[in-house]
Amino acid sequence: MDELEVEAVDSLDPGVGAGTAEYVLYGGKGGVGKTTMAAATALASANAGTSTLVVSTDPAHSLSDTLGAEIPSRPAQIREDAPLWAVEIDPDDALSQAGMFGQEGGFAGGLDALLGGAAGDSADDAAMMPGADEAAAMQLLLEYLDDERFDRVVVDTAPTGHTLRLLELPEVLDSMVGRLVQMRERFGGMLDGVKGMFGGGGDGAEDDGFGDLDAVKERVERLRGVLTDPARTDFRVVMVPEEMSVVESERLVSRLDEFGVPVGTVVVNRVMEPLADVTDVPTEAFVAPDPEHCDFCSRRWAVQQGALADAQDLFRGHDVKRVPLLAEEVRGERSLRVVASCLD
Image (cartoon, rainbow, N blue to C red; front, top):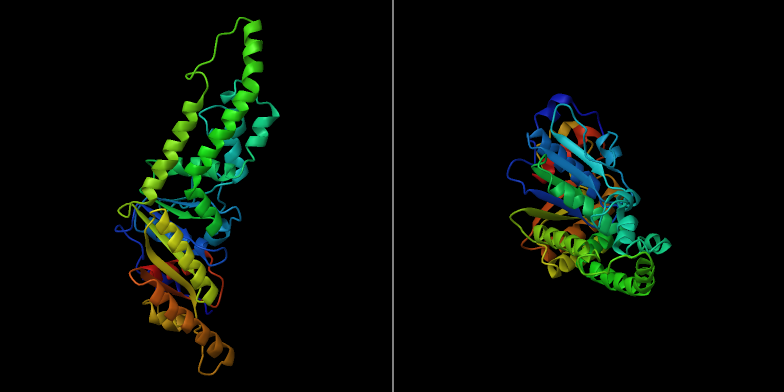
């Protein structure tokens, strides 16, 4: 791609302005460009003057590379000239710091407290239960959604399977409750005996700590409530113009619909067409594919056209956005603002 003139980029419409939802989530299979879309949306939002936090929940973080900035595991402002904040949630860090049960010591420490200190190594084992890392990450995400510093939160979600597991968290936590009850029964008698030896008091509902777990479940349910509110949340599915990607995206939209999460926008990324077809970017600043004289481009464009036709048919009622394939990797503000202009 030819070098893009700064003047041309600065003349672009910010792309994502004040009318955008309070929460914008990008979902889809790994490798389709969710991070690029999230970064472009967040940057455009911040450039428009909206205090914006972009969050990556994908364990394979690439947000730092895309934005060209070091991004920590706690929200930090990464631009001095715009209210842009960013954070990459580390699942292991979340497990150790989230304090899921309202106790010290994160997930395992809170579990040990729930069991009256009798869990021992079992608490650490329980922290590795299926869904524990997603639950801990959601605890942190909930904190960020509630943070009054941010008027908009843009989320680069983990690949499809992880995203769906997050939506299943209330059921996962129900399963956790069952396991905790079993552990309580296993250790409870021994613990009460020890307490009795030293004149300890009895146990009761207010002592068992499960109210803290109920509070966690309530917060997760609240998150689901936010995700199912189209007035506050815009869930955008990202795909590439290939048959399998279209099929997988249809499945994701259907699964999200089962959870009551409305998908308003479908983004088709890496389309082999000139930018002039979808945005006002000056065409002379970019290298465009040449299907007329390039046999490879011609064949790929034929494949993409079929996938695009399927997408338009399957996703009727959704706002389908196309982002052209750029000749160079999308990194840094200039190329991200180009992408944002395609999402406007």
